[in-house]
Length: 228
Image (cartoon, rainbow, N blue to C red):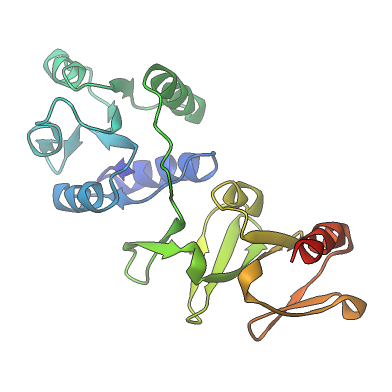
C-alpha cells in the first residue's frame, strides 16, 4: 500500500507499482485512511511519505517497532532526526525524493531479499477500487470473466458488476489460480461459469456472455474438457 498526501507523487508511485509484479491494495492520503487499510487488509509492504498533513507518520502508524509489514519511507528532506526515527522502525528502508522508478523497485527487491515475505496459504481474492475509490476484495468465485483493453483489465462478476484494474492481463494472471482459463489474448474466464462451448463459432458462453475463443487457445480449452 501507499501512504502519500501529494497527489502527483501518489500517482507516480501508484504507476510504478501497478506496472510491476507487485499488487497494490490501496492508497491513503490521510493517517485515518492509512490505519483503516492497514487494519483491514494487512499489507505486506507499506510505501509511506514520512510527513502526512504536516505531521510525521511515526506516532500513528509505527509506534510498534515490530510491525508485520515491510516499510519504505519516502522524504524530500534530508533531516537527521527524521532519518534516525525511520531507522528505528524494523524491516524498513529510506528513499529520498525525487527518485527514479528503478530506484524504488530496487529498494523493494533489496528489502524483500533481506526480509522474505511469507506466502499466504489461501488468498483467493483480488483487490479493486469501488465507485468511491474504496478498496474492495473480490473473491475469485465472484468473477465470471476478465477482459483486457490496453493497460487495463475489466473484471466482470456474477452480480453483473464491472471493476477496472490498471494492470495487463499477463500480470493479472499471476495473481489468479487454476480456476481461470485464458481463451483469447484479451479474455480470461472462470471455468466454473462455462455454460456452453461452440467450437464451430469460436465462442465460449460464460453466464449469458459470448466470449471469443482464439485459435491459439483451443489446445488449453480442449485439455480442460478432457479432464472434466
